[in-house]
Length: 132
Image 1 (cartoon, rainbow, N blue to C red):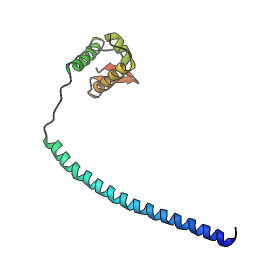
Image 2 (image 1 turned 30 degrees about the horizontal axis):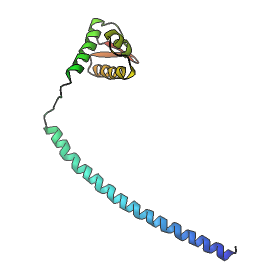
Image 3 (image 1 turned 120 degrees about the horizontal axis):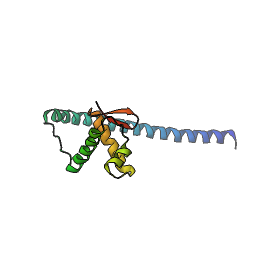
Image 4 (image 1 turned 45 degrees about the vertical axis):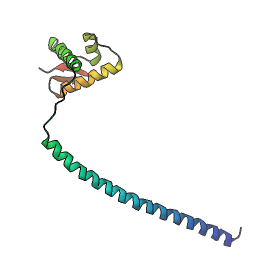
């Protein structure tokens, strides 16, 4: 291969790469415009949604009766043992509830909710106690 062929090959590769760069710039311009339109639409949708949410009366969906019964059983257990710390699994065992991981995780979420509502405290990681 002589220098002329080498330069011709480099020029051909340069031309292909330049063409690809041009295509990519076009795609970027197209995607930038599409993104701007989409973000503008999101802003248009956010305003009425916010206004409606502020004007609409709060709708407290009542929890199913079974869920209320579980919460009541949890609260009763803490009321009966106000000074005791419980882990979720211990609470399940005390209440005769299933101790599979999924059920215990649901109870952990419920205990977290009761903690946020101020009924329980969390004296240690994974431990819950009635707020006194």
